[in-house]
Image: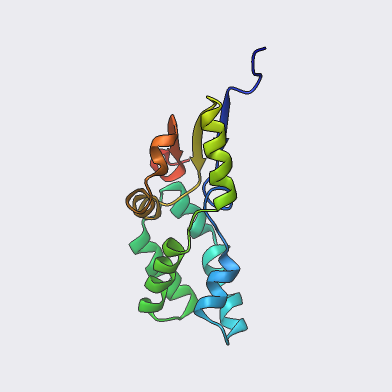
Length: 143
């Protein structure tokens, strides 16, 4: 009997790796809900965040724009980006599924909207990239 599913595509944020912006904000600004709301609106929900993911805005320029738009210190915006990277940790049940699918001989691929610097960090931090037959990152193809 032939298997009907031969390929599966995984996303990174929220699928293979935790992506929880509200938790990031709560961690950085535990006693400041107004600051959390400001950063959420002016960073994570702003078109500049999409431009970072698309690769049409680099992180250094984005941090300056975040700082100007929010009025928060530059060092704080750098810390925000570091925290974004550090909190992208594996979701273990998804990795268990990934391993099971590999054992079944299913070809695995990864497609994700992600910034260049964040992806470079993840490539160094984790060694699971070889499990995929292909990886497409939005910032690399500017889409």
